[in-house]
Image 1 (cartoon, rainbow, N blue to C red):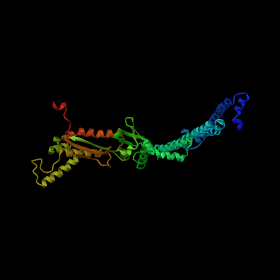
Image 2: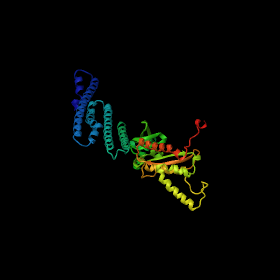
Image 3: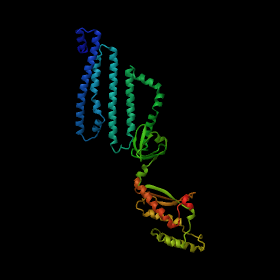
Image 4: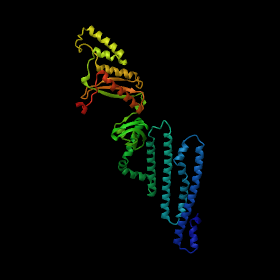
Length: 413
């Protein structure tokens, strides 16, 4: 190789050029020739590998090789021969410049490390995309784990690059790193917290991609679209994106609606506030009038017979309606609600449903409807809930009850 090393040097010396000028021209021309040759080789190898990989991918049933091509793994591997050739020729190009030769070799080795990192990244991204295409991994925080491996790979690459450029042994570099470990922990605090949180979230199955979560502290109310090392992305129902720190999932309280979605029904829990002064005992005429409501006819007949037998057996003076056992308009209305829910086709009859009276408040007596909609779709659920309360609010007047409402300008006319 000595003739190649000094080929242009000998030429310029032969035409009468100075030794110094000949050395510089020899380096410059050799560098241009080698770089041009390597670029041509790199281009040819890239075309060959691309065609081979495309043919292999099209001939197989698995999608993994297609994902490898999408993440540019064959393209990155195609650059390996070029780096190897350049590393081989550098000592011959700078044969007369020892100091520059040493620096050039180090730069090429660092470029080799960078290329290796790109190859590793392509492999890891391909694994991530492949796993996310599988149903059993689609809702797992794969991004977090890939990012951890990638951080480790970049740290290792940086460590080896630094030791090459500084002519330092790896173990000495690691010893020096121990002295600045506190600074590293401080700088990578969020990354470390995110990594620990990702593991806990995955092991405890707290959140999956696609889950509907509500996180009031961060204003998030929507579906989880991405879980990575540092953040969790939530697409809210107004199509805005809220970013939540991953470690907040284990340090703060949030609501995951997965249990509701997986259950056979979605809960309806809402109260109507009744004016207290409209609650009363029912007279015989009131009962006869309410028997005209189909849902209540059988119930009222049975209840009326039961109460008459009790009052007669105990010789109750019914000249005062308060004496003995009596029906109230609010009690009958509660029964009407339960009978109405029982026949409602959108209410899940296998789950609890009832109308219950809560503690009276300054705004009236809360009469709460507790039931479960069979349809869990949000839009349909809201329609079902609205239909139920539309009916009940329109029906309440038949029981001589009134809904509490704060006084307004019409109240004083």
